[in-house]
Length: 338
Image (tube, rainbow, N blue to C red):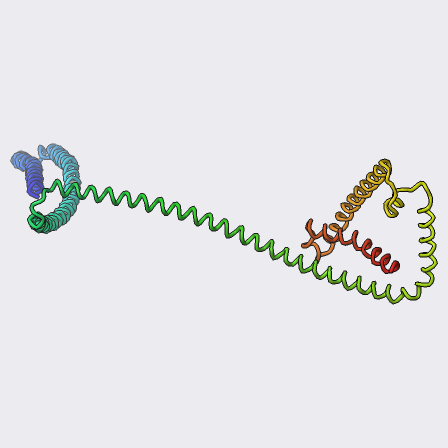
């Protein structure tokens, strides 16, 4: 602010000097003109006519010089005004910066005061802890700080060991939980399989009961019709017995006759029988396999039996289809023989 006032005073003095110079420049031609005009009035009127244009030209020259000087003096005044405005703007900026710095300084002062308070509080706590430490040392018979550090280190080591053991036990429990989950999943799978097998067993029991009922019905029908056909069959049975008696008295005995009638069995007949048995077994296996394929396809075509079309049930159904006619034939033959 002091620099700004000094600069304003200098600008004011320069403007006063310029105005005085202009006033002197303006008054000097007037004095000259008044002197020339007085000298001319003393002369004749004819001579005054010759001096009038010179006086007018001198006045015009003086006015032009005054105007030129005023124009020349106006530019520095404008520059000084612009400089003054710039200085004012800079002063406002500096005032704003000063206010900001003052605010920062006040905040720093508050922080310093708070830190001093905290330091005082910490000093009080340190003194209190020092007193308690001294009391503890006195109570424990004056043990050294080094011994306390050793004890603390030992406690840290024990805590680390405990943490490691806890971590190991947690990992083991996690693995055990995984194994338990796997076993539980396997148990659930086995339970589902057992439920399916139980359902299949129930279905098989139902089918077995149905076959038993059907066989009982067939036996009842056969027994009811056996008395009617007994007379007609008597002739056949007598003929069969007679033929068997004839074969018993004959010398060449075949494989069935030797088996049933106690004759001698040759090695060639045994080979033939084994070959026939193998052929029958292979044909039965082939037919059984084909029957399994057809049964499986038939079960898959139906929406209700498609979920049950697995190998065990298909094998059982195919076996029952093959064995059931044989059982029926055996039952019929046994009923006729009886």
